[in-house]
Image 1: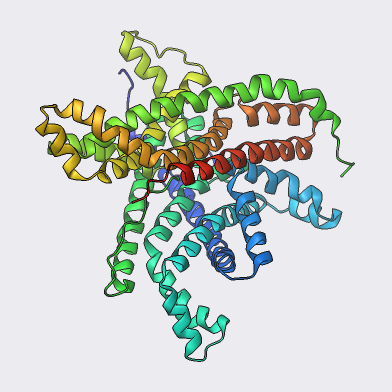
Image 2 (image 1 turned 120 degrees about the horizontal axis):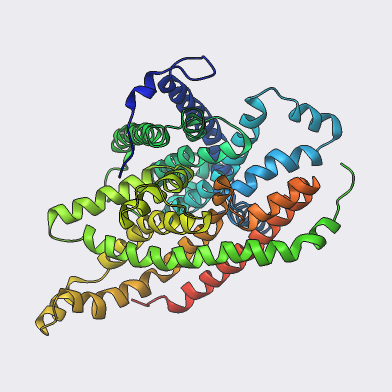
Amino acid sequence: MNYNWNWGILLEMEPGGTGSYLQYLLIGLLWTLATALAAWVIALSIGALVGTIRTTPLKWAVRLGNLYVEIFRNVPLIVQMFLWFFVVPELLPQALGDWIKQMPPPWGSYVPAVLCLGIFTSVRVAEQVRAGINSLPRGQRMAGIATGLTEAQAYRYVILPQCFRIILPPLTSEFMNIIKNSSVALTIGLLELTGRARSMQEFSFRVFEAFTAATVIYLLTNLIVVLAMRALEEKVRVPGLISAGGAPQAGH
Amino acid sequence: MSGFDFDVIQRSWVYLFREGMTFTLTLTALAMAGGIVFGTLLAMMRLSSMKPVAMLAGVYVNLMRSIPLVLVIFWFFFLVPYIGAWLIGASEPIKVGAFWSAAITFTLFEAAYYCEIMRAGIQSIPRGQVWSGYALGLDYWQTMARIVLPQAFRNMLPVLLTQTIILFQDTSLVYVISATDFLGAAAKVANRDYRLVEMYSFVAVVYFIVSYGLSTFVRRLQERIAIVR
């Protein structure tokens, strides 16, 4: 393959004048992480709530939870991005919609991206939480009720704490997914890591240097997340349980 | 908002389905077929007793699974012309259309995910099955093709299909290389007529109906083919 590599490009100034291309990409990484972390907070809170609701005996609440999951699971992420960015501001009351549209960059893309990714991922978290709760022996809930706890207290003090310790490994992979999926936000103009690699390629015509650098940064980020989570998993593992790899799952 | 304009959908749906949906479905079918074949080979490599072979496949799968699909699409969009030139010995990068670039990208990317599913499928087969294959005088490839893989496929069919539904949704990301898939076609109409709300809502509804229909089918299938142990 005749391609002339020029790694020096990473230390050259990017056209915006904010620093070298390498710095430009690393700021992209910060935006990726800022998007992923904020969305993760939304995903965990809604996911825990919806997942829990779907295990309760309330029929209508279970149906509502199922509806929520089906809607956000069956529409592609990029289409959801466009809905949050282009469609939602138009459907809101005029004043609020205009205020959203006039948010200065990058917030105008950041806020819809976080909402979109948060809700998209909350569905997957909800599935994990439901599976985790259902995997606990029935006796746990019964024992909770028998000791005088209310249904809500049994969830709060007995079921959920165990559930989260069990589902930590799949949650880790969901967190890595949210980091990867945040790259879709480039389609609504958020300059995160992949978006910046793409614009670096456009500015400098150094295609493979830009993408190689972005790939290496993603790999290192993944490595750090995996190591940190493995340490956490080791700490919160429920003693006596076989740390299950879990059933094979489809996903990205 | 100046009222929901259904007319723009009525005017463009033939184009959307004939151009866009055809692109999306052809791409999904090609990537599924290629991905499952290559993914199964990767799974067999990962489970191989030859360490270097297993490691090579492992590195490939983990690399693909650690970087975002959007970045992979960009990578191959620029890389495929160079590889093509190298294969046929041309001195300049050759021209590859968005479709073939996307087909290669999705096949290679999805193979990593299908590989992990097939690996779990192969590992779920009791070892005795393999030994009895060898005892009957079959070699490795015969044992795999006639005994292990058919059972692994059957066990993993629902997961493979679920992965394919995800693949169907993910093909919409070819938007980033300006391909005219279903979303791309809708985006073109939306920007031409300035009807973003209508077009993107319509796209979401169509994707929802197709994906929901398929996942209901998979759920039924799962109940029917579940092996009672």
